[in-house]
Image 1 (tube, rainbow, N blue to C red):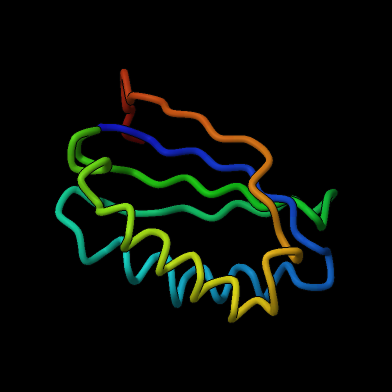
Image 2: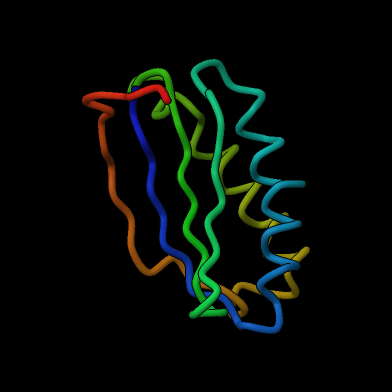
Length: 104
């Protein structure tokens, strides 16, 4: 399993809108592709301008198979829904692999 990890800086007053539009636009689009397993959205009670997105993919190849044009079109739609690209910014990205998963 591959993990796509994104740290987003968003205007604090727009954080809830960001979370809602992300689910409506990005998560819905990604879910159309094979390999998408699920997505987590983390918010900090201490930092209202931070959102962490954790996307779980079955494989790196499936994650990377999404056409760049499709990603650009989705990003444009998302930016429009947010009122512009200046309302949020991806400040850090990382890729992880799940080594071990424990069950309670």
